[in-house]
Each structure stands twice: as C-alpha cells, then as structure tokens.
Amino acid sequence: MRYKYFYGFLLTLSLTMYNAQVSDAVKKLAKPLENISYAESSHIGAGGEESKIYNQFKKVAQAANNDELYYFAINGSNALKVYAGKELFKRNDKRFVEVYTFYSSNPLMMKYTLGCVGKNKNIAELLKDEVYSAPFYISLRDQLLKNEDKQDEIVKTQLAQIKEEGYGKLTEENVKSVKIQLEKIDHKKN
Image 1 (cartoon, rainbow, N blue to C red):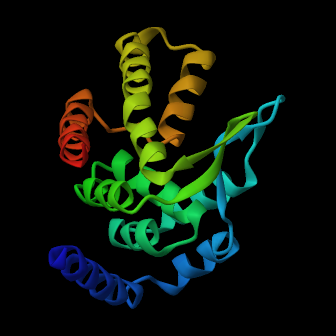
Image 2: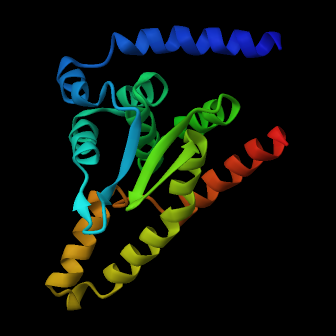
C-alpha cells in the first residue's frame, strides 16, 4: 500500500514539472477542451458529422510533443485524457503503457460517443479499444499501399484518412508489443 502512495507522489511531482513545459501555444489550443468531461470519435451521429471536440484535439496533437501529450493524458480534462492517451499509442510512445496502467489502477468512468452510440467506460477500456482496433487500420493501410501504382482518388482519400487518424507509421509489431504489455497488466490485476 505504501508503494501506491509513493508512486502517486512521484507521478504528481513529475506532472507538476511537465506542466511548466507545456508551451503557451499548446495550452491555448487545449483551452477549449479544458472542461469537457466526455469524448467523441472523429465522426458522430447518424449522419457521420465531424466531431468538433475531436477536431479541436487534432489541432492540439499537431502542435504538441509527446511530453505535452503525456501531461494531458494524466492531468487534462476527460476528453484530453482519452485523446492524448490514444495519440501517445499512435505515436508508439512507451508512456502509453504507463497511462493505461494508471487508469487501470485508478478507474475513471466517462461518456464516450462512438458514431451515434454513447457509452460510459473506464478510460483504460477506451485506450485498450484503440489498441485492439489498430490492426484493422494498419492492415487496410498496408493493403492500399501495396498497389501504389494503381491508386485512384478513392484509395488516396482512404490513405489520407488513415494517416489523419494517426495510423501513418504504427506497425503491427508495435501493436503486438503493446497488447502483450496490456495483457500482463490486466493479468496482475486479476
């Protein structure tokens, strides 16, 4: 039990240090998301409209480095926690596992809207969902890239969307490694 408090203290101390390192430009972009207690997929509703919340985070992600994302994944609003955690995974940042471990040990329930369906889930579950859906995007990306000489506008659009979702560089080996680590964490919990 003592270790839990010690690690909590260390995490709080490190996050305080990171806060000083979040640039003013990134803070300004993240400001509209500071009080958002829910998150949405990139497209929501029956018509598949673009999510304003998700699009605002994409601006944050473009400007933020991994240290800033890590800070938001632990310290931000619920929306920032989920989006920043997922972005760390897509960037293959090793701290993604720390973020998952934190929310696995300290569950935080929030509403997440995927398409037109909203559910309350623990942030750790949302992060795990991202990991387990990644192979689909990677496989599709790799399949589309195989026929690079035969790419029409539809294929180019699909590749652009996959890249926009953050799956431009992540590999299946990266995902397998993360899955193994998450399974170990989940096994220790049970």
